[in-house]
Amino acid sequence: MGDIARDSDTNELVGPPRFNYGDKVRSRKTVRNDGTFTGREIGDVLVKKGDVGYVTSIGTFLQQFYIYGVDFVAHGYRVGMKTRELEAVEPVVEPALEAVPTAADAQAQP
Image 1 (spheres, rainbow, N blue to C red):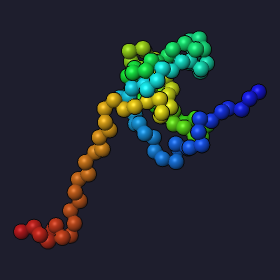
Image 2: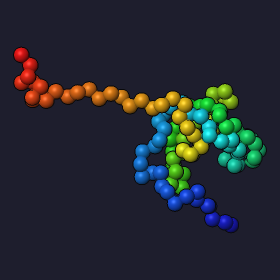
Image 3: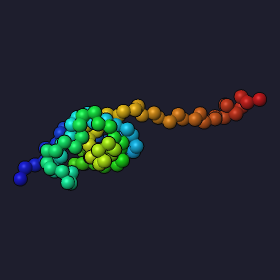
Image 4: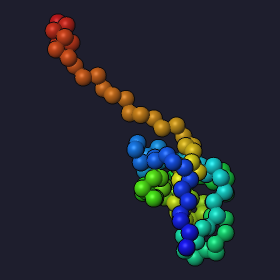
């Protein structure tokens, strides 16, 4: 029995996930069934490069990678994908922070 080969020496889990629940993402590559997708043969194409879906879950794999459950609505199923296999379709917009009044602001008011 062989060891599981790791993709790299980096550990994504030291930072937050790149994608969030509900993010619209696009597949950067064609993904085939590695045997973990029930009901399809090993080697079957699950997702083609350019397919668009939505992040529905965020998990981890090998204590090293984030795995995103992406619902590919056009296909009718969800596929687990790594960060490097995805790209954002729409830029992530950070919510604007409201200015918190300071004591100086209160003194400046007439």
